[in-house]
Image 1 (cartoon, rainbow, N blue to C red):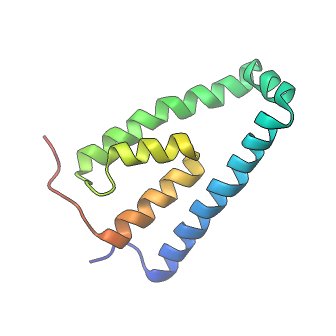
Image 2 (image 1 turned 60 degrees about the vertical axis):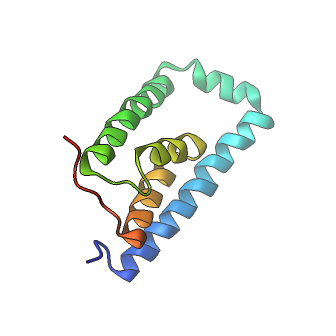
Image 3 (image 1 turned 90 degrees about the vertical axis):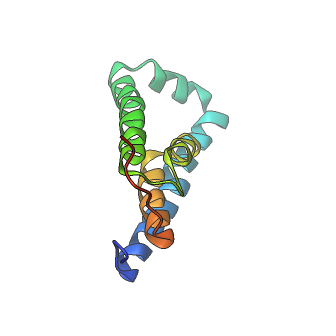
Length: 109
């Protein structure tokens, strides 16, 4: 049994594509073309709260993935997708891949 309908899978794939292109595109643009703006954001306490929040949520989501027993893709693939992309990319991409593969092992203890 698939957890998502075909329409929902397409929505997840589209959201993952959007998450990979748009937030990453903005980040890469400011990293290479306007690094002063990126540096200013990294020294802004409000921006740092969101960055720290993402890095706190990352291991929590990875643990939940491991706890639920997903093996392909597993928690490590989720972490890699989150670092390469963003959470807007990795969460829908992971859900899409899990739905397409339908592979779930028994939860670990």
